[in-house]
Image (cartoon, helix red, strand yellow):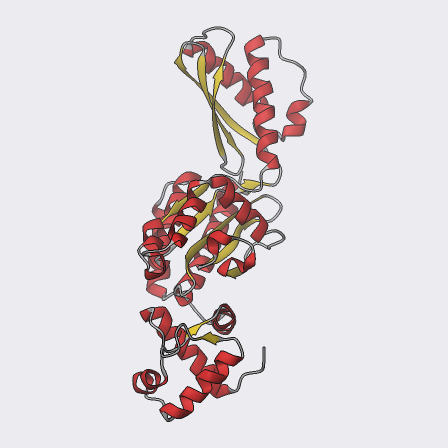
Length: 345
């Protein structure tokens, strides 16, 4: 891409801001009148044509104005990445919401997804903090029916897993509770490798549950993220880009099939640092589902202990000026909460 003059930079930024707000192609006359430019329409028209040739803008129809290209959006994001800030009043409101919430990871994740979706008017994605080394915290065993038992296991870092077990024979709730209490006392704070080296339990039920705990902790350690929380999908589907388009169905499929979303988050954030923020525009050629979308993503947590991802997805003309500072601010809040609570354990 060619170097831009200051005038071209100004015109390009105005075109993108206008298109983000209106979703309508932008012409030279409208730019001059709307922004009171000290330039003639002919001069602006020539600059729009030059920006088109350089790949920053495109013209949907011969008689229409210009719209940003993916490269234009990338330039726009690069210019305002470190400039956009959330208003202080919004920061105080969000902070108050989090510190009023119970010290519960699931509630934090749900709240973070809600805040991100509301502030960005996009769809939010938040993964629970995932421990780099799985450590046991607590298990509950709940009798459901017959030989079936619900095992709820919580790991240091707040990650929760649930599974239905089918035992060899029915077991009373009293015995299940005693088994859970013994294992909680034995395993608290231990990593999975340490648990796997413990002597076999003399009680058959204790040993069966212990084996299942080890299997579940190993499975958790192999995954890149904890549970994924989302919110605001209707925000995206109501945008003009998706109103009568197959793109909406492709985007919806992304959130219906969590394995695809997990793969996307894993591949797009490999090697990212806590506190780092990245913007993916048009799927960066890697995901057909995101061809008309942009994503703003950040990693949060405590390096070496537990980290997670959060972000927002919207049309390519999303309000980056809102999405970027919101994602950055909520990531910082969640990092502080993880540090204050999980690291404190």
